[in-house]
Length: 289
Length: 187
Image 1 (tube, chains in turn brown, cyan):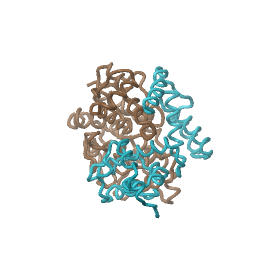
Image 2 (cartoon, each protein chain N blue to C red):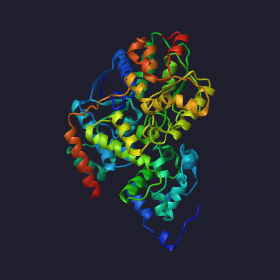
Image 3 (cartoon, rainbow over the protein chains, first blue to last red):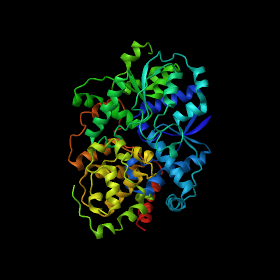
Image 4 (cartoon, chains in turn cyan, blue):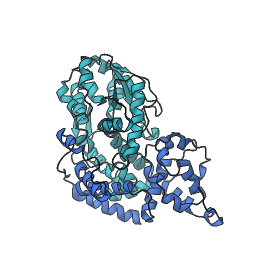
């Protein structure tokens, strides 16, 4: 198995630990990743709300680079995943856009490069049975709230890999790795995403609701697959605690970090020290580090 | 809320303009309110998503384009996924934001569009996001000088923010793409 790897901007900055752990897990499982040379930003939300054609052209630019490599694309960030998939869908189905975007990128692209999220690849392509065979340490029954956020499963006609109201792929993966996923109703609630810098008070309220629900349903930590969800729930957790006068201390780990631990990868390779809410106390208690 | 509804607003072309820009059938909406029931940001909006749709239908143009709602929408796609009439509301919101910017209406919400513009300028300049530059620039231009300032040292220490930007090698091509997109969009 080999993929063209699109890390996206966050995985080179605020989410370096997602990059580290995703690469470490893929290495351990024998999934080969080759970074797309000269990839550009997917444009994220600020582009599709400002400049429609550019929001398709930017992902297409990167997809054209991947096409040269002759490989399908693997990406980790839920927002990048969404923008790439949306661009592909439009380039496949809509002639009006295809014509104009091709003029912008000065090439001919018809949405032919396959794009998949790393969670989809691990669960549905590599397979849970095979992962189970690779589990070394296991996660010792750690109680986890799997948080999918918005763009991993919505809109379903674009993402096409899990149920959009009650997704289960991350839960099933966590179970396979020896954790105990809790049943909770906020799996796909929004954390406020890109409003983090501009309307922080909205993000704090939404993050508060999510953290509280996870804790009330018995979770000892959350696991996520999106850098924005992670930073809103982890980096801003102290602000949430201050504003709502409630202590959570709930670590928010990337699912690849937990997968890495279960597969027996050294904690140092998984960037655990980059998380703002320190997970080490919990992980030590459970004998995971 | 009080609106002036007249023969003029009812016959206005606003609804067909929005439909054309968003590629959505706004007229299909029968006001069940499911979009607003599931909207996570609804509590902070000045008009709920279903109100915005109704206002488009009856031609209340200025209030829609200057509303906070269109900028507070986080594009989480919950409404689009659940709409029984298959109206992609997130796409309608995108179209409204672009129309509002083109028509240079007076925004009730200033920070979000400002942030978007700075974000895009960063991509145009480097091809990739440069967080420290984005935050610095946003704080300066928005007047929220000390926003999140206490978080930055920790981010640098943990290596989660790069001091200097990384430019992609094909930056000339990216700049050209921005220019071309603007030209074609104007057509």
